Image (cartoon, rainbow, N blue to C red; front, side, top):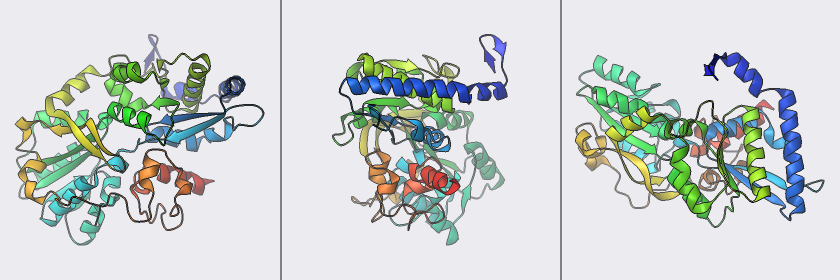
Length: 385
């Protein structure tokens, strides 16, 4: 990649952002700033990230273990995971709908963790065991190939994810799908969720680390309306340990100085405008609607549904009669506390099922299924230790 007009190898970038001595210097500054916060009467700073990959970085590099814990006259820095796992927040009604479609004879194709995530009564994996044509693919492009190779089958691609994963299906749809191909859109938008998290009475968030991948698509500008309304300290960061540490330090300094900012600490990838071409493709294919987030509820203007001109591939329109009509579908399995984990209200180890009945091998809640789920990441980290 090019940095400052010069070609820099990925290996050199990783070395720079994993530099032990640089990390030590940043950690020292974090502790010094936490001491200054303590002197100002602040005993705890709660920072939420909204990205599963950030949780992976925090866990893999044990970053929480080097942050101030409230001892030695420092403020405690508490890092909490928000709804950054797209699989975890996929509405239960969409999963049940996909199950109904598979039972009706449609071929359902999606990503691996979507196949395993539980619905209210069943999962696509269970449908597959019973004989339904449910398949794992890496992309809509793979699903299109399958539809072309099987022209007598009705093929539906379950398309979940945040802004990061929306451009690719948008391009494929604009290029034209096979006549036997349908789309179940379950995309969600991050900025509208920030307001819900900020105003939630049980969370008391002091600052946000904003998602790097999403920000690559939507740019810094997408958060400005939220920031201007709430003046919440926000920083966009990357996914290497130095990225995360610099993001944390940036937020602590904003709080110390009482000068909240919307900072971009990931300029090597994220720009003010974002990926304009990707945004255009998304807007050509999708319309913004209200949307349900599993474990959170309805968030206004937070979902991407296919525009009316794509009704001929919109499985929600064509198979409307198979969409679940239950008014009270259980979103979270009995005994599971994923609804509270998704919003960062509790840690995974506070759920009575965590690493007991609910494990990566025998997942019960969506947060243990999704590869970006908080429970799954922290379980993998616990096992690796």
